[in-house]
Length: 317
Image (cartoon, rainbow, N blue to C red):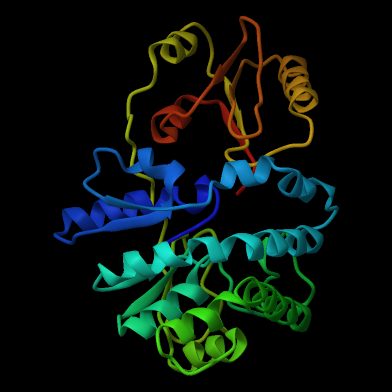
């Protein structure tokens, strides 16, 4: 179960595919617009009603661009998510009733854990970022870096409080609906931690080593590479690659930008000033580049494309 943009979903397609190959029946529960990501994988799909791209392109979603800091953007994201999470609750409960175990992303873990508890199902977290507080680094959602050991840990607790705010109304409602005693999101999280609720993290320990002050039950197990529904590159893209030296890839994935035309022009100007060809991925931001030395593409398998690039410029999630 996951919610968010494409980057919050794609890694679970590969994980689901591998679990299916190991003999498990897997259902990906997420926004309906991402159903094509599991086509042909054998992973079943249960759609959630919210369209994240439409929300990001709405006036409220575009308000995220007015944030000048990681903390400011987090506040706006929390308020946006609070308005949306209640619309997904019925489908989350319905999907859980057809499941034996719930694997929960960080974006739905507080709500998913309450559903699992109410239905007496085992559950575990499958997170894509390190969210548990640590002295070793600041929360990535705040932009990375460090505030010093005490500040890093304090910031981590602050992020947890922000996440809890997203579910402040929905978790108590779900608990009541499923016959559970009333517990607020903060005490519920602390109870999970005392029980050493397992969370596996889908990033490499060579990139982010497991913090030494994390509690038991928090593991780092390597990347979950997405399932490639179209592993071959389109003919036009192959022709472009064969026509000259390796280009530079520029893509922002599902990130949106306040002025796609201006940013596209800056990207093209920078590449040409450096004497480089470019492959620009349109993405949700609507980037575009024209000319014999530039090619604009849609969704392609990065696993097939990136080995043929001179460099990759991306938005880092």
